Image (cartoon, rainbow, N blue to C red; front, top):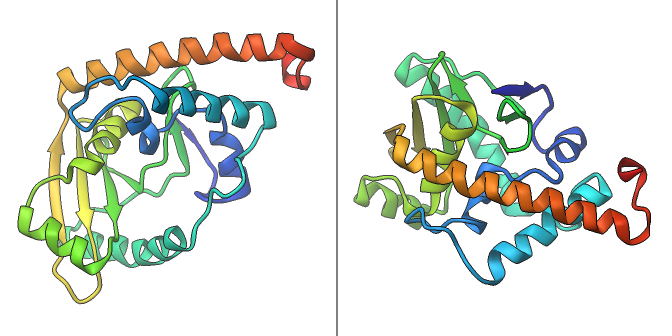
Length: 210
């Protein structure tokens, strides 16, 4: 695991992650059941990553008001977790695999072996998570993908909303799931590199291609 010291959602962070498949986006390549996707979704994601790499930064329209509000609540949730569970959270910007070609932006790392993903959904969604009492299917790939990228053994999932009890779960690393993620992601990265070479050959490409 490599840690890139940038602030999440900053321009430096956007540039650092441009062109990299990241854990929050793995659902473009795998279903919530950890099966490889087929059809338009992986193709569109390939085009997105190519465009980001070509431009050296994010595509227009990345940030939303919902994301901004979620980040505000996340800053409340972190100290709440640290106080309740007596576990300091190490904030990080971007982490990548050792080879630097697959990334994740965890909400934090915990100790030497863990990490945390914090979600701050709408009240009714948070209540739905509380009643189910399990990792929401929508975030299974992000959680297991973060463990794949970082090499960590466990991950906390926390759903937080003001005026409600939180949901805090511990998700253990699953080597079968990790293996599937690794196979699909490295296959995608190989195709991405080949596609970038073809794109560069079309007209000489940007400075990075020359």
